[in-house]
Every structure is written in structure tokens, then in C-alpha cells.
Amino acid sequence: MQYTVMLTHENVGIHATVPGMPKCHVKSETRSGVLSLIRDNILETLRKSEIIRTSMPEEPDSCAETDWQSYGYGAFRNDPEWGKLFDEIEHNRDLSLTEIEID
Image 1 (spheres, helix red, strand yellow):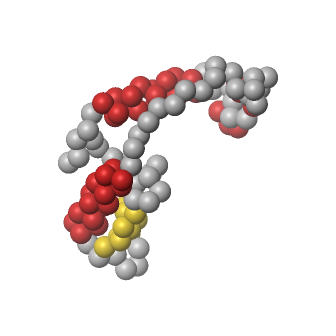
Image 2 (tube, one colour):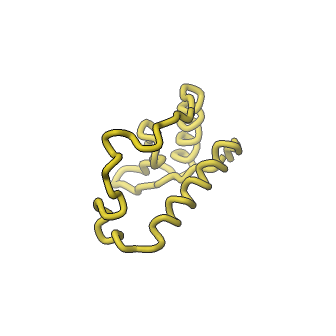
Image 3 (spheres, helix red, strand yellow):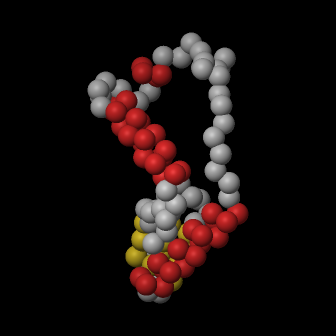
């Protein structure tokens, strides 16, 4: 599986984080060092984690009467591509749950 890693160059070394995995962050003085450490950190996190799917009611009581389309997408409220974006995210997430490969 491939993960997006954000490298932040700081005054002393490089900080690596994995978006969506709050406990995956490391620092090192070199790029190769930080990449090695973040790979180890991802593997350790995966060893300790379990990914599950859970069912929710079709219309939870607290959301049943909410018009999500007009609720608050800010600048994207009227963007016709908004739904397509979330469909693509769901599709990619489903693919990532079936393919496990770490470079």
C-alpha cells in the first residue's frame, strides 16, 4: 500500500507526517533517515491497528432533517463536482483496503 507522506524541512532536520494517521510522525536530520523512520512508524502503527467498517442507519435521527447539500460547504456549496470528489475518495478507500503493499 502506498501512503502520502508530508516532509517539512525545518531549521534542524526534516519532519515527516502521514496525513490521516495522527500518530505517524518522525524527525531526522536527513531525508533518507526520515523516510526510513516513517516507514517503520507506519508499519508499527498498522501492527497495532485494526480497520473495520461499521453500519449506520440510513438516516440517523440527529441528521434526518438536515439538508447536507446546503448545510455548509462554504465556497464549494454549489460546486457540481463535490459529489464526484467524495465518490472518488470512497472508491480509492475501497481499493486501498484490498491492496496491502508498502514500498
